[in-house]
Length: 331
Length: 273
Image (cartoon, rainbow over all chains, first blue to last red; front, side, top):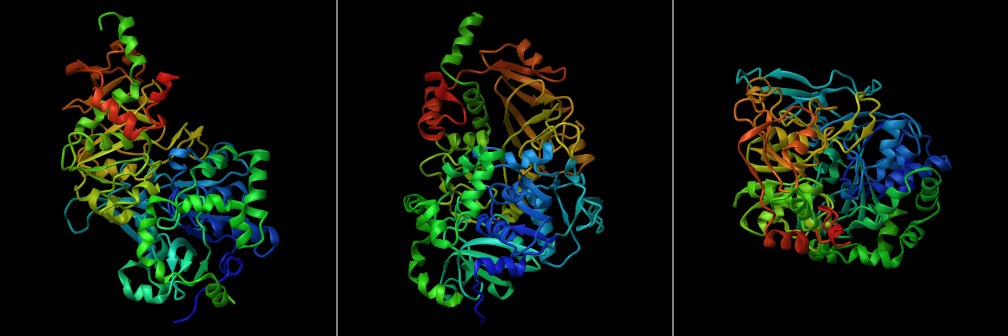
């Protein structure tokens, strides 16, 4: 099978277009596609892409998505949650919704079951899907989407087969691009996930194009030995970007834990000059993977690796590809 | 505990949220499948697990099932400390879809920004304009789905007149909908709705017929007048009304030494500041 490894900058230039819809995997503290999101911003600044209005689909806008909101390149969001969990609410999302800073964004609320179901419908190439959630309450409210995804929203109806049960019909979401961070992938695009899957099984499959970002590239022999660990089959994946610590400051179970200190610091620096300084330093200042790792700091990286969940990856160390071999395959 | 002064003295020994947890965790049954959310709602199931309900199965919506947090209480359902020793890991469609919607989840603990007289919840926003909220809070997450399909749920939240309200600013998650049996007859929802709202002042439970919330109990440091004053609608007193006993020494020891070690959740460290 084809080698699907791709450099981060090339992947963003290849797959990201203005006014496209992107679904990003993970959860507020976990496996968000943060490095890919940062590279969208970096390429936008360098002229590698020209992005002004993205349609963003993400289960919980924590770290990554909110940086795009902060830089004013999000037009609309479909999400269920705008918080960094216990670390605090997303200040950037709040400012955009409440005050239009830096610009007004359109927002549509879903629940985790309704949004995941809509993505599953997209993955299965269905126009809509029935669901037991979304019947009662304000999740039926439309968020003024710009025609990119048509409406009406949540049609409540009865089972046509006569059971008398009510269901909400939810419209499918087929994003132009799905981006999912995984701990391990092979060169064929097989993505392996350790720990909770969140939405990623169906969110990945929903994309018209699918890009994985992997902390480590593993030998395909590992997939052959543990084929049931492959959550996202490579035959459907368009590219794999190798980027160790790519989900930081979120966790990538088995590889590193969440950097709560950094996330708390980010929340405190989510406005004005402090936000500008934050983005300048953590998004724009570095030029390559080593400089990115240096910015996190070797001591911090080691501390985050030394996490109780590292046991999840212990059986698989022998299949991790050395960095020089990965670099050669990227050429 | 006769005089008002002595009752208030209890707040030097316990925080209101420790009272709320000590009530909420008793709704958990041993062997039950229990769902936890973010924040304070993480505490009661773990307190039950460490006391009378060792065989409780804790389910987190991200897919982690049967894990016991290592080192500290998780900051969210996606924290690595609950990724370590799970019996299995699955996804949101299996937890909120399969397990919840088929009635396999016995009890859920939820937080809320607002709760109305029928136990319907708002966790999304304050204000009357959806497109420009006065204040955005977190959103549904899995809350809506759990309120729909969990066999029952218990809410832990703060008690103020703008939190326990007549009308929600946004209807995120269903309680008893329009009251009475409307939850099932009119809306066709599967689960049983809220068992109790445990606040920092009182315990509210639904009337068995109207399903309107009533004051089932208050904590010894507060009064019925105060609870009524801080409730955004005229509220009745439930049959069997009582005053809650303070948390036991064992409950406090586990809450402070094993669960909320940093005091971030119940605020207990302020008692010693």
